Image 1 (cartoon, rainbow, N blue to C red):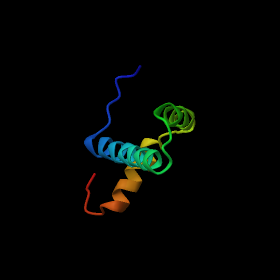
Image 2 (spheres, rainbow, N blue to C red):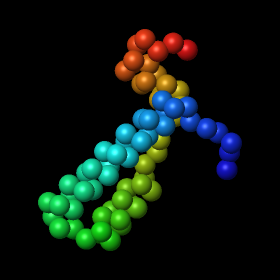
Image 3 (cartoon, helix red, strand yellow):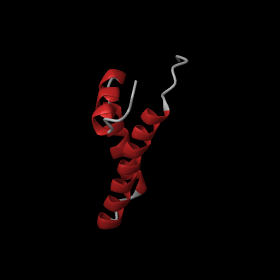
Image 4 (cartoon, rainbow, N blue to C red):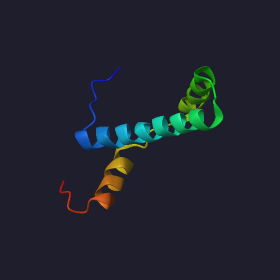
Amino acid sequence: MTDFEFIDEHKAYIEEFFDIIDSACHFLQEETDCPDEAINQLLGEAIGTWQLPNIEQLDEALRKQNPLTQD
């Protein structure tokens, strides 16, 4: 484990991403009556394939979203 820490903007980006996933899971469950176990298995499989973008790509994307951000 490294001692790397995300800056607040990176943390917010990741939190927003997982909030979207959480909302999608709730919607899926409400619309299909899918049991929790099946959603957990689906998420486990999906999360195993996810990769966060590298930090330079994330910084560039954040700058494009907020052009007033200074280095």
